Length: 209
Image 1 (tube, rainbow, N blue to C red):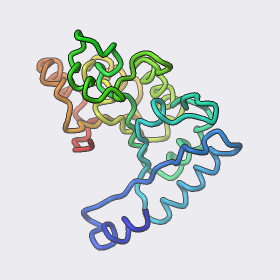
Image 2: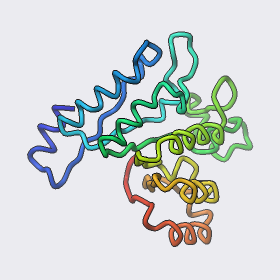
Image 3: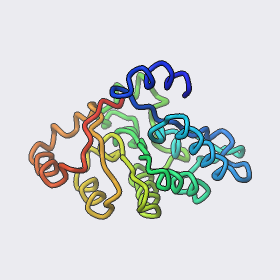
Image 4: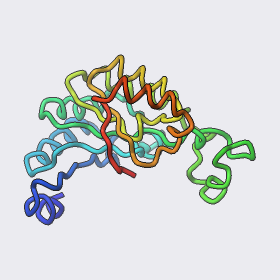
């Protein structure tokens, strides 16, 4: 973090911002949430402008027993609350393309992609469904109305703009980001147009991959 701030932000403060992250490897140790909140506070003091949460939370990060860490686990509440207190946003990536949660067989629209990358599949095993994953994310948003959340990649479900529209209508502390990779919007051009007209002030145009 300090290297990025020294090499990018300080020489060009009008061109770069840097977000910090949480190390989930010790997430099931006592007091983790408070320690992570304190680290976040220190990082913001050094110059971080927000918190980036990768999709590892909910899909990859596990405790010492091998159980997935849930997005809405109350142990993380001090982290989200601290972001609200500090006035910095949480950019959170939850989920992946909807097809990655379906069986990777010949009926899957991303079959070739999953054939080449079988570890991208979240079908079966102990992974939550995409709706369950995003419901957990929404519960965090609702529990922390004073924290600003940016749900990356069109809220995690660009294939279902009705869901994303409902999310924005219910929770005024949430924005979505285009991600520059959401080809699914092109398959729903009329709904996408209406979505942009309804929520133009809640969409961030980015190239986050």
